[in-house]
Image (cartoon, rainbow, N blue to C red; front, top):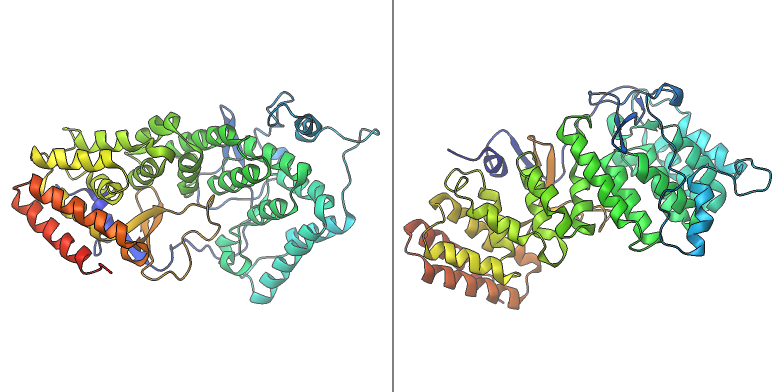
Length: 434
């Protein structure tokens, strides 16, 4: 029986779409949206099960939450102590009133939020919005109070929903404002990022906030980012995130995680097999490798076709991790690799190399206009990722490593399907040798 997930990855089946861009659902008309969130544990979730996000006044949100007064601020430094009043919403001035901020910033923000998106957005309007965001960043710390107040209202304008995301450069106004905060920087922006991380359940926001926190205070908020990603992923698993792409959550787990997130990723394998497999393969210091090897050796999965992508990713990373190469060679010698899996192993060794879209490492992930770039959308789990040819970037030494591994596998197996797949892979790799 063929694996549905991997059938989706190959050309032809209707569940798989490959192109130069990841397709989205374009919703016509005016969409003023609210990242309405309900708290489960310590994470808020959208208060809608549809693909759109209707605007609600903040007072109508069933669960809005201020950051806890004793919340971690980031270390025990004097600077961290200074941030506490900002995070708890208290004033830093003697009068006890919140800082008013820049009047120009408030005017700019009003212009950003008070336009009618009916009928979509013209290129001229998109340029005007981009210019306003740039001017808002130019106001520096004086713009932070106005941005914070808007974020606290849990409202948003979904640019993607009106087909304007690419024109503006952001999927939503909140994403644009969060990026503006990152450009401003400083302790005031850090405080807003920290507060947002404690409340938002939106995967893209969690990734952007985590990246900016790590830039402003390297290493200090990584555990909180992992907690946010875990909580949001748990909510997505029960259908509470309105079909949003959870890929950014896997990027957070992969980038900031270690052995402590392996169990989370293993748990996610049945629902988001592509995302979880690539995140396990990309964990720092190979922390996810033993779990991937175990999954490929699981007798309950062997021969079912359910773990074919895992074999492909194991082959892709085998030259980098000797323990993976040894596991594949041992399974070959014991004839424990199914016939269908050999084609996937050959693809992993000689074909396109798969990667998560990782907004924490590259704002423009996947890289634009790279030769051989392919993007993928899997309907099951709304999974989106990309691949690039190994030989566009592979060095002579890397090619030699792959040839050596292919030769070891050929010596270890007498399976005709294995020999045919490996010989094809060897010819492909040899043809690319400098």
